[in-house]
Length: 528
Image 1 (cartoon, one colour):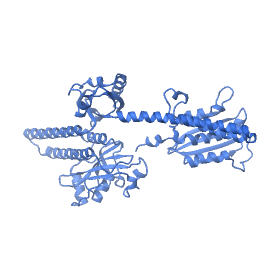
Image 2 (cartoon, one colour):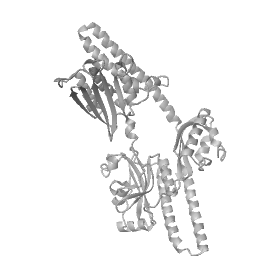
Image 3 (cartoon, helix red, strand yellow):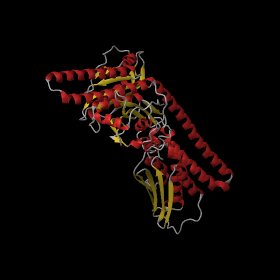
Image 4 (cartoon, one colour):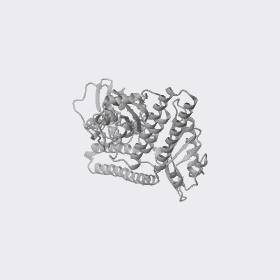
């Protein structure tokens, strides 16, 4: 969504206006940081910027979610809006579908930007200095909600008000030569700050979420109208520590402990709890808060929101119940298939070796499913943590020696692991362990296998090293089904590379995988 306007200025005019504010490369300021944090909260977006566009760079006066002070002109969405003469508001629903941004390094690479919404920061003369904007890592609608559009407009105005106030104070400070002039300037500043406070309250009162703020010590001193509508409490009755009594008895201690920890450390506050509704029922809400700091890093306020998620929570509970039921049925299917294979082998004795191999592979898939399937609290302890090492420990348990000591020794870096890779990893290592037990290191009592797992840059390397088994004369001339299955699992399913080295003292297998192949969450956890 864009609104094209006719350009009535030159780039030289624009850069001259930007220089007049004398703001580039100045320290962080709470007024601008607070605007960026509020915009991120309103959009529920991971990234928000007060972005000023210089001749050869984009510089962030304030930012949320990047940890950067700026970037290049080539990667700046805001610079594109200025350069191409777009209107005050530009929205990019999915950057991968927009030819202007599809090859942007921050779109095609990390962090994988998708959505953008920005409003130009214009001087009173109409010159664009940059933009107030948000980014998301997933596509969104090309149409902003009325609240989102209003927030962009009002907060962009506040940014320019702060910049105008800053420029005015700097210019007038050079002219003030009497006490009377100083007092007049102070009165004007107070008036401007009061106006800014009024705008802040106007925004929070229009938000659909409950909004609150506290002093640095956690004393609650402000709630918007949504809070009082939701709780039905009289205005002012939940100030200070009065908020805690609104929580469900089972959630009070947990919420208080986390809030105390965040006040002590400055870490962001995020928690789900049940809040008493005006009807008397308790509804699930998501509570979030972020500290606002001054230029020295000292916390001067906490700003937070409460979002009603009760319906979403109930839908999720229903989805979890359905997932557990489906998973239970899949587990039963594995058992039925295994039993059918066994019965068929009895009818056709000549097929028993084949049937035994198929049953072993089905059993490996069943163990993989058991590890990553949705669990109840009662079933969860039987499978351990959701990590690669825990999964492999369970898979290799049948290959321990008579004393229960493992013969396949795991070492190196563990990794987050989920159902995305479970089937392929289970088939790969089932085939390697089975072959090692028949022909390799595990076919003799003294043999051992060392499996090393390590992350290297954007790759995850798994090295299977057999030692102490029968000597290997040469590489096999025929590729068996199990070997082909292992190759397909790594290269076809996980997008990696599989290499085998037939050494005299034992087989060496290296599986080189993308770091994101083991888990959906691993890629999502990466940031700038």
